[in-house]
Amino acid sequence: MNCFFHPLAIELDSNTLESIQFAYISSKYVHRGIFRDDGARYFDHPKVVAWLCRSIGNKDNRSNISVQITKTIKPLFKKE
Image (tube, rainbow, N blue to C red; front, top):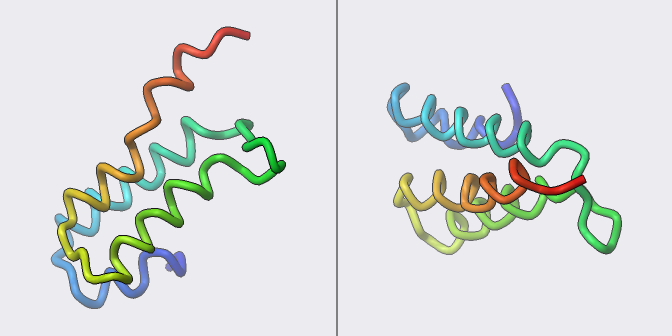
C-alpha cells in the first residue's frame, strides 16, 4: 500500500478511503508531465498540501479530496 494511504487506511472506512484514493490517482494522472518552476512535479504540491492539512488536525475528508483535485481542470485545457 502506498505510504500516502497507509495511515488513512487505519482510521477510515473503505468507502472514504476509496474516494481519497480516486482523488489522488485522478490528480496524479491529470498533472502527469507538468512541472513547477523549480522542476518539481506539480502533483507533489496538492499531495503535500493534503498531508499538511491532515497533520495540523483537519480530519475533514472532503477537504483532503478537494485539495487534491482543486487544480485538475486547468491542465485539461492547457494549450500546447
